[in-house]
Amino acid sequence: MSAASTRFAPSPCPPTEPPLNRRHGDQTQMSNAASGNTLSYTLAELCIAAAAEAFRHDGEVLATGIGVIPRLAASLAMKTFNPDLMMTDSEAWLLSEPNPLGTRGGDFVQANETWMGFSRIFDNVWSGRRHAMLGPSQIDRFGQSNTSALGGSYRQPKVMMLGARGFPGNSISHPNSFFVPGHNRKVFVEGECDFVSSIGYNPARLPRGHALDDVDIRLVVTDLCVMDFGGADHRMRLLSLHPGIALQQVRDNTGFELEVPAQVPLTPPPTADQLAIIAALDPHNQR
Image 1: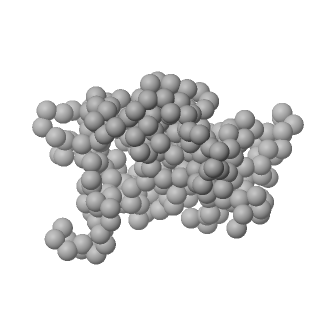
Image 2: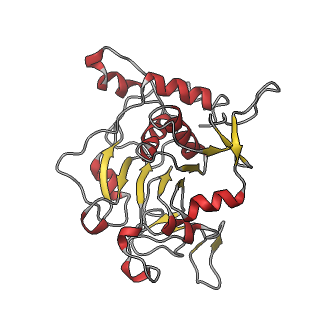
Image 3: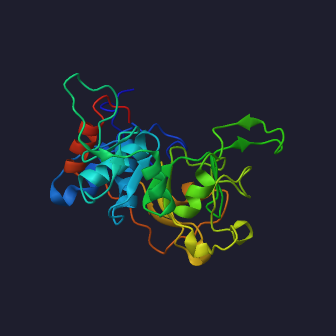
């Protein structure tokens, strides 16, 4: 289904895992009626704009977006409110302009700024001057995540995934954010993750010599809402609901209790300028 097709009128209870390319056109017309705008956007574009906010106040750090939505979010932040962000071409060059996704024309010349080999990458990681956004398969109430294995036992899990890789060290060394395209109880689990791949706000699993304040999980963006861990005792807190999403729907699809403010705002829609930048960054519409 093309992202440019299929408009819809939001309902209080849309499907749990709607396609990210569904359009929020009717809701946008309602929310922007006062200004006379009738801007149309997709759920993917809403998530990109929301996820970009994770990088707003980072300054000059290395931004690593793993996956289409996180990559576009970091690129959007660099192209708008945080031009000091550093991004690479995923090989060995630091760029002054983020590369667009997908195949590029034969005349395309990327904006190389300087060499950025592995040794310099790790200097940024260990010094805390990196912010990664990725999509774990599980997240628990502590903010611990799982990218390794599901079900079964430690010796014989039911499903093997990518593995923890560098995530244990990354999670204690620099800020991280999460993007979840399908908000449900299989992701936001009731107990601890089946396999703890990254450090969260769990005193029982802190590395020796570290405190909870050393952990920095910035933002959690899903297809239903935006959250963080700014609640009491680093509890997961609801920041905003996407248009057409009810609070109860978020609660029903989360395996643990959230901190919910008295008034929950709507997630701000992307602006016309942001939509134009996203379209230029994703010319093949992978979003």
